[in-house]
Length: 408
Image (cartoon, rainbow, N blue to C red):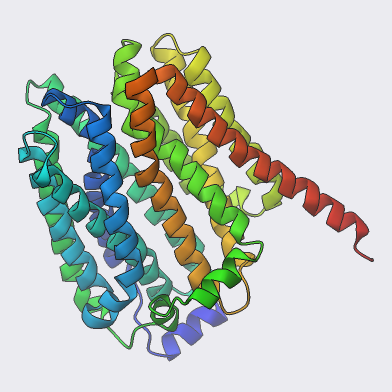
């Protein structure tokens, strides 16, 4: 309460309930465009391409996403956070139109992937920063959880819109047109929020994002924060790989890919909104070990036990619980384990690692699917998830031993 009062005394801007609701609505609408990337494989194959072409499009987005994360601090200084996100919404709109009109793998499709990656990277980076500057510290955790749930809901809605469009007899491109419209509307919402969020100078933590140096990078990677940074990249590989090529997996097993996204997103959103607040108060080394283990279990289910709609849903929900809660836990770990004065840089590297996994891994995965099929692809994802879990196990063992030898 005292921190909240101090925040008001300093004259800092704050979110009203209506403004925050509009913020989450805008985030949901923008996230739909990212969700449509999981339909790119289906879209490209409908135009005569294959999984390799889809992996190329998704992976080129990694380049522009990394660029967007790095320059987001500069954009904030020039335009303010809300206006920068509004421009990102326009880029996402253009990208979705490009994806829907490109006939096959070529310059238009590649350029659309690059534009989409840049727009998503700007929003993903600046959205949480806006909350950190507009919300008192005592309430940030709750607001972050709600924003995360809104974004995950939008991400899941993208593929589901594609499934609904197909059910109604519309071509798959309709999902991308709808995502372009929602991105534009989301941009308009953030432009309207500019008046209530453009109070005062750019926050110190945001300015520091513009000043990432080689020294600070090495300091972060030489600290314990390197472990959750690696883990989020490995988790991103699992999430990006399974989501991008879920349409191929579902077609092979004669299932409906919409069931995967419905099960995964519902579990992840519920966990992030209602369970993460409880989980993050427990020992993070124990909980990260448990929930990263759930990710391994879910992939084993996809590889060996999925044979009908019910088992498909169960595997997707298991992945949603494991991935959704693991991300929340290691996000807190990277902040608490970063070197003094390098928290902003640690969080930036955390985001970069996530994007490299989610956007970069599909390129390798597509090559495996083309050359060897879905089964070897699943075993590769299983190997990555197992390494991720073993890191969590090793950290738990090390932490337990350190606690035993510490003097009372």
